[in-house]
Length: 68
Length: 353
Image (cartoon, rainbow over all chains, first blue to last red):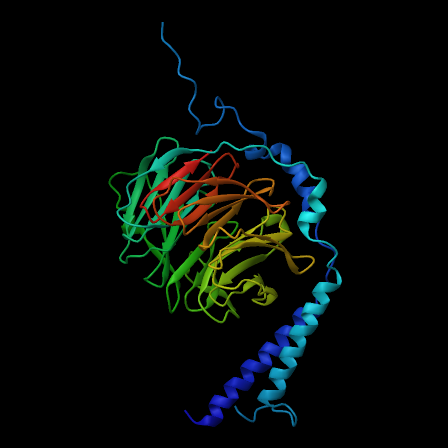
């Protein structure tokens, strides 16, 4: 491979990097999404936070029952 | 090629300088909206109580390291893949093995369940992603119906069906991600931009639109537009390989786990890192991360055999889970959020609740 081709691909790569960075620098930024609000709203339906009783969670053992 | 479109003052050096100054500008733009850290905003939020999470099921059967696992939408079945070349479908309630297929290669690093629950996809050192329809016909050989879908030029590190059984997204050691049509095996879109192996990917929740995030050995997390193939945002704050990426349930953020022993949270609308989950005592890499349903908890599996549970808002660790006897390599929360499953180099999978 001649050095001209190698330089060509380096320039191509560098050009693509500059174009990509230009695009990224230009995007619209807004204040951080309200992750807090989402968490609080969804907390009631999060099984790990609310806790599921052994009776309804298929993974937890049910209390042993005695057969009389 | 060397002289093609080369402007008078555009040399390699000038382009590199421009790139550096653009990177500086990017940091400035990101800092402009930087009011406070997430944990400061969350100061008034009620602290979490004590958690009791235990191993409720242990899935034994793989002959070597478990490398990947995925849940079926039925919240019960699990597919897992291993270094031993086997892919197994389990019923996690009963721990029974429902299907097993032996791949032609070892190190099956990726596996995924189809949304319909009727097929699985997997691949690894064979550089391919193959789809196997699941059949309950005892006379049928699963391997006979195998369909080769994706072809990369290096190992397959991750795969995921999109919203349907018809398309698969793959990530590879060849530095690219790709979108494939399952039926025809046709390449629909390829995603170039990572400077090294891509190790993980995650699709945005369907309501958020057509994007996905990928993480790689170049320490970058990149967000892609699936239609155009364009990278829309990139984050380079980790100090080592990014092993796992997962969207926050609302789709507005994503978490990452890295060999630098930290997990981080990135806000997509503010375009910056908003939290780091780390402790001085945690020195081994995080291999896999996933959120609880509300996004309040982040479960992370580590190379020191433990699973740490983080309060996403406050940045503190709320629990540390012991049980695995070797590295935790994969971790996913079940579709209804009632449990999570971890896979390990100790050959087992554990379901925790």
